[in-house]
Image 1 (cartoon, helix red, strand yellow):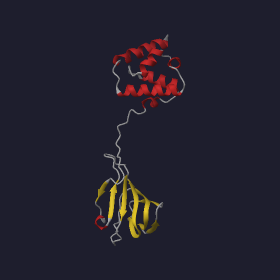
Image 2 (cartoon, one colour):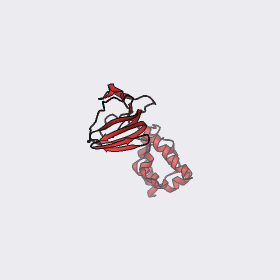
Image 3 (cartoon, rainbow, N blue to C red):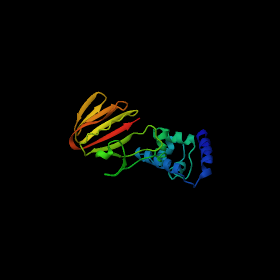
Image 4 (cartoon, rainbow, N blue to C red):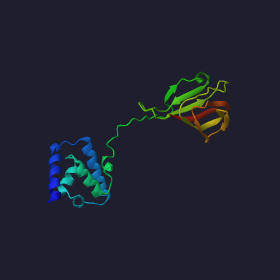
Length: 206
C-alpha cells in the first residue's frame, strides 16, 4: 500500500507536465530504455524491480512525464546504475574547436618574418586552464631563433626535420618521434636548425 501511495504521489507531481517532452525528459527516457534493454529486462520486470507500474515505466520511456527525484532513485536502483547515468548526455553544450588539415589561425610572433610559421590549432573561449596546441613550421635556417617564456608547462613533439632545441642551460637534438616536456618559465626555443623543413607540435598549458 505504501508503494502504491508513493507512486500515486509521484504520478500526481509528474503528470503536471504530461505531453510536454523537454530535452531532459527525452534524455532520461533514452537512458532508461537503453539500460533496461541492455540488462535484458522487460518493462514489466523493471516495474517489478522499482515498485512502479508498467504504465509508469512506459510513460517514462516515451518522455511523456517528468520524473521526480524519488522516481529517478528507484529507477537507478532497479537498473543497478548510479542516478547520474540517467542524465548522461544532458550537459552537451560544451565548447570545442575542430581544425581541418592545413587550417588553423596563423599568429605573428618573433621570427615569423624569418620563415617561422606558428599555426594555432584550437582555443577554448573563457577557459583559463585550456591548453594551446600550435603547429610550428620552420623553413628558413636564419640566425634568428626566438626564445619564449610563459607560465605553466609546454610539450613539444617532433613531426619532421631535425633541430637543436634549448631550454634554460640545456640543449636537446630532436628528430621525428622525439618529445620534450618543459617548464615554460625557462627560456626555450630552437637553437639550431639541422634538417629543414622542421615541423613540431607545441602544446602549452597554464
